[in-house]
Image 1 (spheres, rainbow, N blue to C red):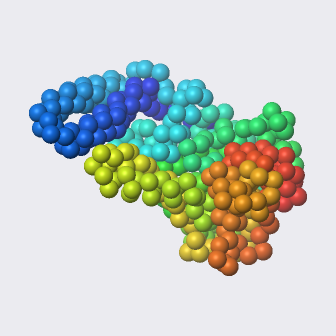
Image 2 (image 1 turned 180 degrees about the vertical axis):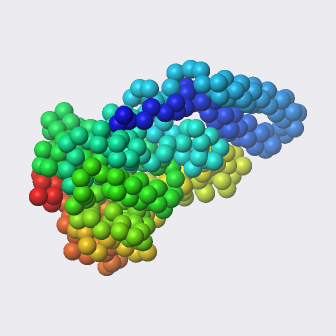
Image 3 (image 1 turned 30 degrees about the vertical axis):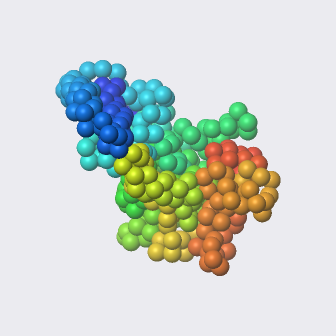
Length: 377
């Protein structure tokens, strides 16, 4: 069999998590904000006891429902969360937001790093790989998605171009490997998992692997950099076969939106009335936290690989004041190129700017298609 049919989480697991989060975020935020306001009013003490009892009842009901759903889910009943595309979308989004917490508290909902084909995992074993990739070549192009995404995002805008990056490169002799990861985990933890997975895949590949290209969208590019650093320490590592690394809108030096969330949570926490909203922002995963700083010089590029860095701006020119400040709405060009203050993380790298598009417009963009054909010739 080429694909592994694992039981996986059920819809009941997801509903249990929803009840838990509803108690923690919705009820907890409303309670703390309400009580903070009451404490500033003359009659606040009279109403505090009533309000506390009401919120306690609501929270207790949600916790009781969560425990009941957990017990039911443990029996294996109910539809599988990842049986359809919508469930996989929800799973990937939740993992991106709180994936590190899921791994600690609800491991059945935490996504493992895996090769993916037709919505299922492929084990990196000789028999499974041979069955899943009957036309395997020695040239592998590995695709890793961004935060809160999954492998299906690589099909975005296919209607615009008539093909995808993976399909176009397959026609040119490459074998595409689509990955899925828990993007809520720390970058280096995901990097180590990716190294282990690719090492196993290369060793078990049906034919000798002669060349590897890595393609990462957004956070995926950072994970690939972290994996390259770990992979260099392995005996006969897969990373020695990497000739090209392509990053699409990757925040090598951090993302402004993540920086803003961090400062916003600290600002909200200064007042009792808004502290609960600050805690909501602070619940974001370590993966989101890592976007604030990106990866700097302590994670150097692979010395034998050619780097190709793609940025986007909403404006035609990246020098336009608006494009310079907001970039693609998530990442600025200088971060996508790894350049700041006279320093550059990727000396001699190829750079490509795509104008008048946003962060997700870089997926299957005609200009990037053309560039990939040149870079991976």
